[in-house]
Image 1 (cartoon, rainbow, N blue to C red):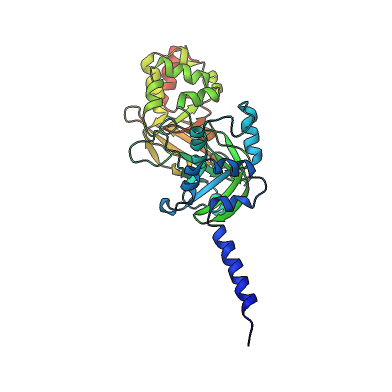
Image 2 (image 1 turned 180 degrees about the horizontal axis):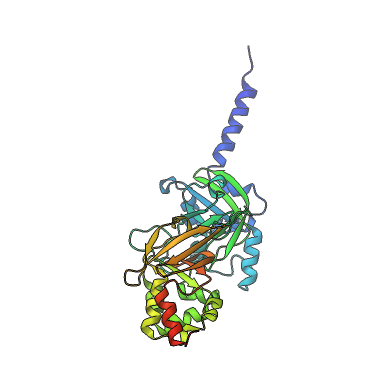
Length: 336
């Protein structure tokens, strides 16, 4: 009589191994560089449920490594996972590391990149409008706007333009994938707070003079094309010379009434701005993303997909996108 016991035992061991990977705790247990995360998940059952409960659908967990937590605790003067931040803050942070959907590495590495919703829905960090999902992240091997000419390291971009490198990919678990990241993503802030972090001082001054800062920060679902400090300097610092109305017109020209991450911006397409029916057009040239206006001129996106509380900000290298704004300033300034 043939002995089936060894084959049966092998089948049982294999089945146990498959079942073990169904749970997030078991999926991260196999990586020796995720011990801090395992400790945090043990004390945060709501996060474990969010990852394991299949009723939520597929998801992708950007699992912070021990290196990522060590950097975070050092930067915030915390000594351990238990000292700070609070459990509520930790849940918000890690919810921002859970992408809504199944994204294997092969889906994230194509030119152009991927913008994906997360499970961060806390109103302190998310204001995208009624019916919107959680706030977004952007993943790419081609830089922060997905347009670089050559592939580099795979990164995920979050709040205030910070990024986290993905150092291990495609750890499969029951509800999707785990990718290990070596930095914690910064939580999204308001537009003006993000501008402050990026040292866009003249833009902030222009918003204050035009009395638009609060509107920009609180309007759900916007895209801000934010000129650099150097762009304002090159134009002669119009933020201190134009009238409030002129500044308001110019700044609204730099703002779309919907959140448009770089994969949403289609080349050759005109997009309506908040400046009295004026439009801007998107161009993709030579491995870069540009925007242009009705009056000519072209501004290059030098830092794309800065995720903010109520949408996204793309930093550009010129202030003027319409001729009327530039000419109005130059006349007032005596020819610039």
